[in-house]
Image 1 (cartoon, rainbow, N blue to C red):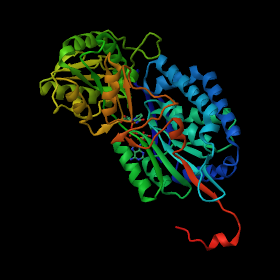
Image 2 (cartoon, helix red, strand yellow; image 1 turned 90 degrees about the vertical axis):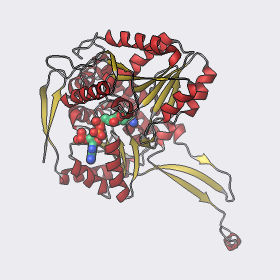
Image 3 (tube, rainbow, N blue to C red; image 1 turned 45 degrees about the vertical axis):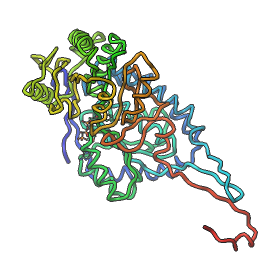
Length: 467
Ligand code: NAP
């Protein structure tokens, strides 16, 4: 058994210590979830939706408590933590309302008397989740999975173990039958053991591309269905006809939400030469005026990064860029004193060799890449191993749509930062992931899409040859 220690990144004080569960205990929980599945799968969608709706109410009732815990464990500004919990409640209300329609049988006209496409649950689905949106990521997966009739086990990032335990309690408080949703505190070896267990029917991971590849390998070995929501390096394209002020404001939001630690954060700012100077100056001026500090205070816009390692990583990114000729327009340094704070940073004079251009930067550093025009912007945007999101800024909406359609990404936005919405599919292409979450597409990831075919009983029919 190992130990998990949670640390407040704003104060660097230990919050709590936990022991990971031995493998035998985790497999016991899987058995309980498997047994619960035999009952839960027979609940009607209406009955399941009623619990999902209750879960939304529980989240809203406890939102201040949950938000404080999120902020304490991973450091995001309290206003963002509140917004995260509220968004989870919205997710519950969308699925509670749409579930019946999205899981309704489909009628197909074929050669028999009756043909239906039926969506049946698979069993116990295992989720491995990250710390950056500890409530949102876990629930974005669990709510549709349970609504479809599956039961689920969560192994959360160790950084947000307290959140993982609160989420489990929230399901209980919402009246879900025992063992429909469980949290396990497990190390990576136990995760592998659980994926291998015949009690598990599918795996969903949100996290880094590296973890996704490992988990997919283990799931592939045991022929388990996987959904992977991985890293991104979203392009943020500013064309010469953009409203530069709006684009600069959008750039700040896109780069600094969650202190820059979001998979769909704008991470590469690709700006047409004509407006590059104006955009960069405005962007840097807004970035340097952001209030950084105690994330528990309402007025704070940016809290600390998740831990000391993340600060060291940001420093190394800046050092690499400067060594290769990058010019810092603002920020570039850690904040002195206690806590894992790093200044919002804008870097120009960038080149493709720099790590801030090539890799996923999980923090508030923004590289500005200057291009001649639309064609080069699209080409650079697509020159990435990632394909999660992207946004395009222009006053010509038709042009914006045309550019958006050419971006290799799971979600594209014109004149808006990339954001997730329960009514729209979410996911990535290339190394950003496999499969989708949210909307009807997410709901149908962990189901058996069953073809039900009924023919008449007369014996002469049996003489005709099936194809
Ligand atoms: P991470 O290090 O990959 O961890 C994610 C989860 O996977 C954690 O629960 C972690 O557990 C577990 N894990 C990692 N390696 C594992 C292994 N070999 N075996 C079993 N479990 C393993 O990612 P993170 O630092 O928490 O999150 C940041 C990354 O997630 C970024 O790349 C970000 O872009 C991505 N992300 C993607 C989305 C999306 O929707 N596409 C959303 C949010 C975040 P431990 O904590 O115990 O190591």
